[in-house]
Image (tube, rainbow, N blue to C red; front, side, top):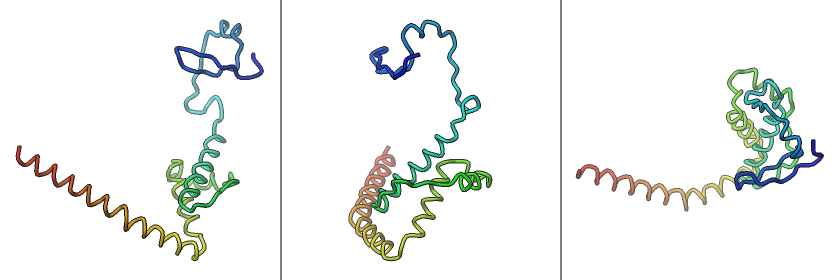
Length: 143
């Protein structure tokens, strides 16, 4: 087995392999572990949750969350409830909780900025969408 990943071009696409060309000839079976039974991939899901929450909070609050961590016990408690085994729902709930805990001064600034964005862009966008929708309805009625 090779010590480092090697870059290969296979069917005009780049692949990275950590196996020597001579060893590839000896492979007669490939196993895909899609459900995590053979290889425990739980840590990668937990890390993905942390990275997702950090990314979203950075974009919402304009603050960097570099070492954001969720304890294993917190993750397990949420998963045991049955409603949060879905990572999307779990991220959503954690983000809501963190936003609810922001200082009131930051919350006021955030609300004002959101109001400016809402007043300028979103209302105009909805007006354009409504006019497009009305135009399509009138065209369909003629047919």
